[in-house]
Length: 129
View 1 (cartoon, rainbow, N blue to C red):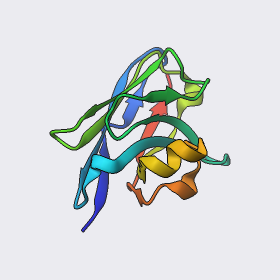
View 2 (cartoon, rainbow, N blue to C red; view 1 turned 180 degrees about the vertical axis):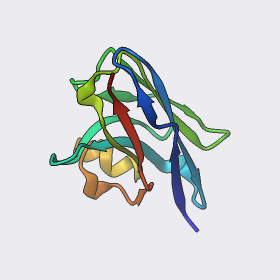
View 3 (cartoon, rainbow, N blue to C red; view 1 turned 90 degrees about the vertical axis):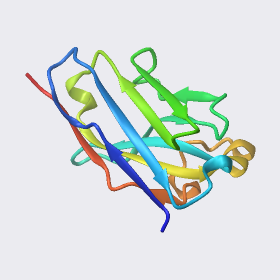
């Protein structure tokens, strides 16, 4: 059974850090990019970051550039999202998703949720004092 499992969410004070993990199983992730999305209450889901199947290409939403870092351990089939200098506006449920790198690359629609085939269940991140 193909699945993604996120972990690492929690409650943190503004300025703090968290590291989210996304563990993939049941499918060959060699051809899949991993994207992180988030959804805050009352807001639409937005793309946060993605990493290519090889791990060589990464990108970030403007709102998190310079604060978040995505990485990939191919041997462990796990992707990480290191989140630093967290702000209250980062509060959301964070989801990881897997999408075939080819269509993402050729369309350029890296944060188009419709191009992602597998989704995790989400992990809550709350930034509050």
